[in-house]
Length: 107
Image (cartoon, rainbow, N blue to C red; front, top):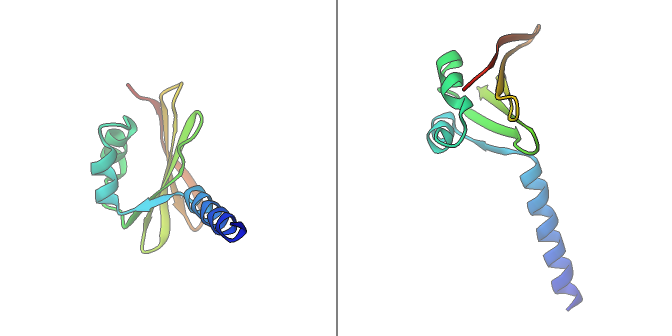
């Protein structure tokens, strides 16, 4: 019985750690699967496109949603959507620093 509890606890802890690391998937799949549920994705597609090697949802809890957009394993953009304000920020991430590309309230 103790072995089953230990194994179950280990599996649960592993699942929690993996969930905390974000949910990374290809850009095309991400936009297709979430476009009806997340209003900021239409603006993001218009501003920076949707052709990314991977998209990683860093945070989708609480009052904000942070999404990272990568190509060739390198972070290129990140978006921050503040839910109660309906404010979207899109930031270009480059080697020499970050540049805000978009900061508007969306409908």
